[in-house]
Image (cartoon, rainbow, N blue to C red; front, top):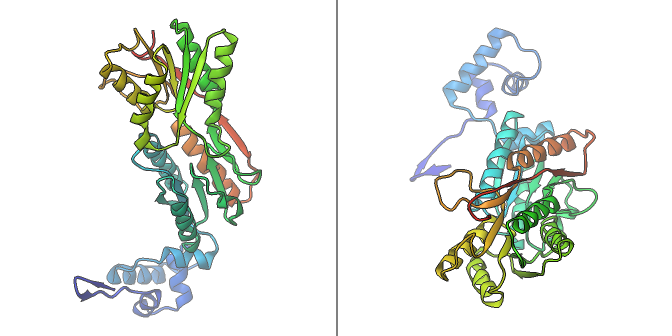
Length: 331
């Protein structure tokens, strides 16, 4: 290896064994903390490790032991507050259980998901946790333990999700309780079977139950389209006075555009989001939203994946409860 034109020597396990005056097997037992080694011999090996600044090759160790301690996490974007918070809890839970995480930011692009999937397989990861919003279906054919979040892939891959239907129901009922007469659902168009679609389904059923007219306005799932989507929505449906958006980001963009048009929230239009990414009261208005159990999703996904790796019994569908948090955007 060279850095700034200078060749750097990276010590190997053979170097450690030679300096300590022991066999490769003994050095390996000390490095992997397996098997019986005399205390004096162990100290010789540890001293050689420190002197050589030896770092074990994790991939090679995993290959030899057939028990990798690496897990890949594929998410659409670390920029989104929901995904970044989820990443924190996944990494934290993995670390507590003796695993390390390799993060893959796919930008919801099928080609990047394919590239990352191949990369994770080359790195001998023990398993994969994935949130994928592209139309790539190749995850269903991989031969690695995997857990999917928010998306059903097939009966062999367990998935973890919030109770999206209950969340949509809570949002719609909150809008009606606040006096909304015409409801709307605004969000991204699902490209595949996803539990996220249950949010829209719930609003429609609640609106029908209460004899409220409703509209649905969806666009392709791209953050770049959010501002255009809410502008188009308000142009097409100026009489809507209660809106449930598929995410908090959609809700924020909608509130901004309503303010630009001189409409007051919640006096003229009530708004409820979904996710719960606004986790403090520093910014106004405080959004009324359906809060996902982000920590629960992250930790449960890790638990299921590691049980899958250890060939333990698992639950293939896990649905976690959501809650409604009233803020300043509903009456």
